[in-house]
Length: 162
Image 1 (tube, rainbow, N blue to C red):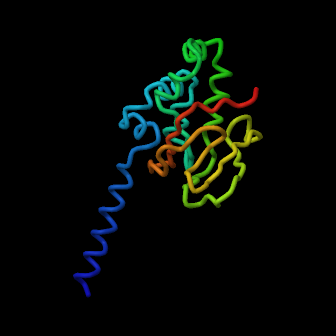
Image 2 (cartoon, rainbow, N blue to C red):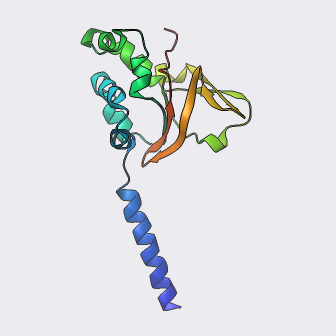
Image 3 (cartoon, rainbow, N blue to C red):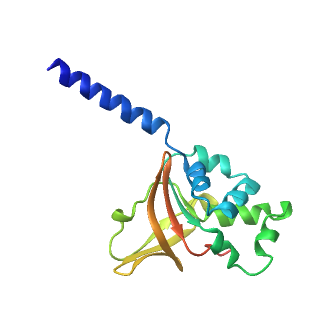
């Protein structure tokens, strides 16, 4: 009995250490190597720290290719200091103030609140036999776990109505 208690305690300790060392959303995105534009934009908008330290977030993360598909000059323009408010609005539209895993989605369209403007902007999320879409973007990889939330990789940048 004592041996089983020690084994159970060691198992708990190992799992606790693994969780403590798990990468946050920003670190996870950096390690993936395909979110350089998103990370640069988050830093320019002053949101990188929030994404790194916030709790229970869901991020719909556009890849570098998704940013490259925007009209020429769009990213450069958004990164200018005078456009910080617009950049914050766009990036905040990609973040939910809760964890949302793909297995929590019903087989229909739902609307979820973002952190944009205090949560008054809603994303349309649809799960069907062909996959998951968020507004008009496809989720190409879902349920990437980070220590402080979930990342879903999307193929387009989500632009809220301003």
